[in-house]
Length: 307
Image (cartoon, rainbow, N blue to C red; front, top):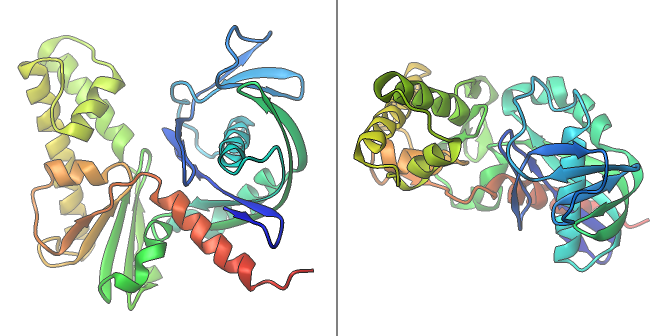
């Protein structure tokens, strides 16, 4: 969001392990470096004399996002998309981003230092951008996904944000997170994808693409034919049922607890979850965390006195 009174662009970015999201754009998180300028300028970034394709395919999994420059290049791409939305070529930027609830305290300072770079000039998709990253505001993901609707939520609520690498679970009471009841699970959509790949190879002696599996996750079916579709549906259903069981093991019975499923896996739970009812909701907009980061950041900045 561009705050005219402060002359600041709030660039909210959800740095996912499969896709990156801003409040207005979703793009893949692949990064490929080129020795010379690629043939096409679309999704091509020139930064510090080097050329990169940014936003094609998926990055290999990383232990932490700060281990190399990849996620900073993705941040610049996210800033460029937001600048395009507001018609800007130069901007003072506050980056609003997030971290998993369970690792927020441990990783906050390192991620802040990683993103707060000051002045940067780069080209992306044939356009030049000049930015000054003046601040970085970080918020807990999952909780951010429901930030703009907290007042309409039930007093006792479970938010389950199913991402590519982790599943974040936050218990709120009177709209406030109960930290001791909140946790993260390491088996998420990428783990589910690998499970499906192994099952198809084991049962049908064939390999299928991630795109085919994602189609089944997001639509409940696939274009590969009945025998492949059946195997994929079975494995995705097992993933959904195991998640419901893990919630129960952690003290939250999905048959009784009001739940909001969010993130990329919200559709998976809607299509394949075993437990349904009016107490279960699905926040299917994958940009929800980015929208929440923007919401929190704007509220914080608007409280500050203009210098």
